[in-house]
Length: 457
Image (cartoon, rainbow, N blue to C red):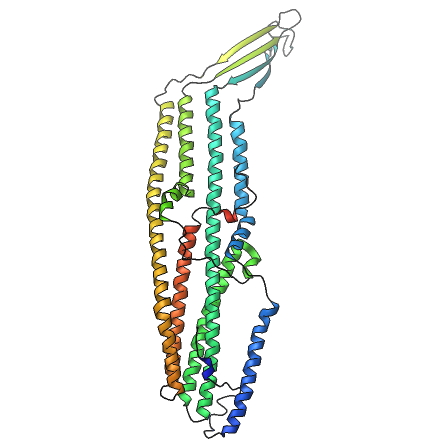
């Protein structure tokens, strides 16, 4: 980047205070120029001094992703959901607990034997046990459904991780390019201040006009306004990044990946879609719905409940045992059981249709993002090969013309404004390219940032 700042001889005095002196002696101007050069050099040293003692380690994208995954409460919550689903899957395959039954039968409540347990021959103290014998195929289906729920929670965790990595990457990218734009503007502001000093010297030596000083100062005000906008973007992007990685978001960003490398090859589209978190989630829901349908079909064969009891009567009477069985009677299967089966099958059709539609939508979305990524790369190359060199040459030409006395200072300022606009445009395009790259890169969870706390086994 060439800005030709050496064309100006900076001074430290106030140009307005010296504006009335139009015929300053050359010796005094030279002495002021030397003093100004020393002042500018000291100012530059003081300006960069804080950077040396505040040398924090740079925050790379890979480290940001690792920090986000290790500190995520969403992943911790989903780990608990996976554990809960695994536990429920085990209990779902077990038969119901037996039921202990205690009671007193035929106890008189009137007459001389009222509330006397052993007085009447029909009074019995009863103890028994009742057990529902669930069919083994039903238990197996319930267990498989519980395992399907656990698998769905594991798939949900992968989706959460993919979203976490994508959002962290986008926040890091916004912060990184805000930093780069701030650096570019700071450099331009330093050059613009040198231009003001140079215009002041030219005015005092009779080679320039006071209008040049005013125009140069206006350029500084414009750049400082843009600087405020970039500072706001820095603060916002830092806060967004802190949402995922905490205080580490305050560190400077460095070492971006190569956005020009395709995040997803054309031959990987179908493979990526088959592992897309939202599609795999719908596939898991469809698998659970199919098991629900099988469970509803198995419910047409009711489970029997067996009961065994022992009844104790008075010492003068015989004790008794009883054996019974309870069988649910499906008196209207066409209006109940068959309706349940039809509802489960309709849900399967719904989930299947939704998955097919989502597959088409994401397939088109992937191809669109790939096309955008290629387009951004071509536009950036055109700026690098064409616009930036031309803008630099224009600045150099305006500089030479002004230095030789054949061009105005405003031409240099316009040329430099054009150059910074081109470079800002280039950064904006690269940021959009990086954001599309991140959306493709972290469409699926990346292994480089998966948390060590993994309960997917």
